[in-house]
Amino acid sequence: MENRPAPSNFIRNIVIDDLNSGKSKEIVTRFPPEPNGYLHIGHAKSIVLNFDLADEFNGKTNLRFDDTNPLKEETEYVESIKEDVKWLGYEWDGLYFGSDFFEEMFNRAVILIKKGLAYVCDLSAEEIRQTRGTLKEPGKESPYRSRTVEENLELFERMRNGEFKDGEKVLRAKIDMASPNLNMRDPVLYRIAHASHHNTGDKWCIYPMYDFAHPLEDALEGVTHSICTLEFEDHRPLYDWVVRECEMDNEPRQYEFARLNMTNTVMSKRKLKLLVDEKLVDGWDDPRMPTISGLRRKGYTPEAIRSFVREIGVAKSYSTVDAQMLDHFVREDLKLKAPRTMAVIRPLKVVITNYPEGEVEWLEAENNPENPEMGTRKIPFSREIYIEQDDFMEDPPKKYHRLFPGNEVRLKHAYFIKCHEFVKDEQGNITEIHCTYDPATKSGSDFTERKVKGTIHWVDANSAVAVDFRLYEPLILDEENEDGTDFTSNINPNSLEVLQGFVEPALKEANPHDKFQFFRHGYFNVDPKHSTAGRPVFNRIVSLKSSFKL
Image (cartoon, rainbow, N blue to C red; front, side, top):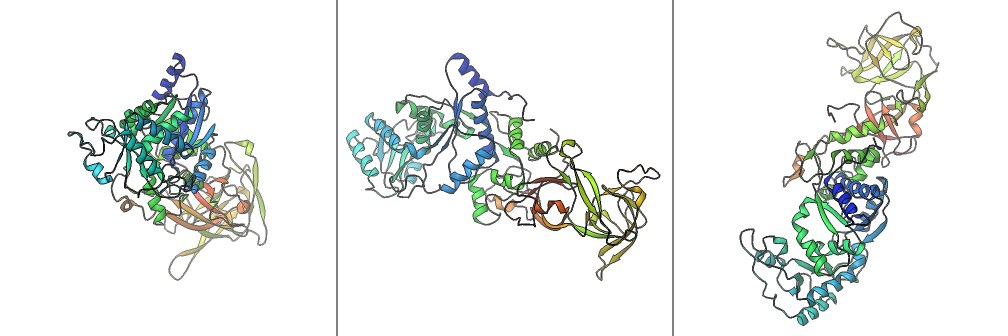
């Protein structure tokens, strides 16, 4: 799965052409997140695309934090992003912060002012919006557009020195207020923000806008191919204008691709932050979140995520991917890696009345029948065991092949048992099953006298380890990608079910992030947040089967 050749896509073809033509001598890409939240599965698509391209052509990939907005950015997010990129299996060649270039950006803005291509404007943000015009009507020039170069240089320096309040002045590019592209109608390049920055502290009180900072950062880092999502396609003329008019030695080129959309999945950091802030989830790493840290905690593997991203490919048009496709790659990755053990999620006690009291037998079982190299393990078996509640019915329908009065089933890795009695409490709930076993039917023996149709799993009641199971369903109910204004109305109230059950005794000391396949239940991961010594908590990663077809 990991060794398949790199799929072709239009960006990869551009890179090949640029190398063959000599337009690019070396490929330099970058992954440039803003540190204002945790990364999600959509960012994984960009990470894999940028790093894979550079790796394939012996190039370089930088990790850069676009930290030009001190009001939303935090060191916590910086560290989480680093961790996520490393966990996905990538190492960056250069580590940069946009704020590392603040002095250089200021100097480049001065170049624009001296060329008569930027001016200090006193209009408020609302006034700028009102005078920008529409797609059908040109904008209106600012009354401050005619300020002299000398006046603009003086005012811009005073902005830097902190002489004005937030919003009192901005620096705008002087381009074309009648341009059919609204982004070219004298966009704001700098705004005033008296706020402490996570990286530069209180050194600056003016900060560059993204559309000004981003192309300069790419140029200063030596990026050759600046790959971003389609919403920035209309910004490309401004990107090129900034690089050209700021007289950058390196001229990166911007290319756009369709971002990842998935069913039942929120793909907005703003909305994900709202879920965290409103305590609708258990933090950024809640296993129901599409964040990379949430997927990691749930039990997804980096190999599965990389394979998923490579399979969906890179295109110019938007589409929505079925979230079950990601689950498919998790199953494919874990089926040969995860030990297969038994766990009872909704326990019902069974007493084997003809089994000797006080005796314990150790049965042998394969850890993974599809991967013999994983060896075998010993499982204790005694007079009392737990089975699943839904593996017994007092009055079963036709074609029910599990346990019911008078019926015989096979215990996985053990013996045939036959039910002859059951016990109910005062409310009529079945609390205990009484069975007999046939010693001649031990698993692995040559017993062929009779067959049974049902096989059920179990754990030994005397040595089983009590654990919590956390079962997840999609956090978002509707099948469409969230686009509504109040997406919280689509939150699934049953997205998490916590159950108390039992696992084999060998799992008592399971470590955080250890993964297992529980017979009939699915793949599970030891939760690193809620597990305690001797009491692991298991997150269900995915069920064993899905209707999804690749």
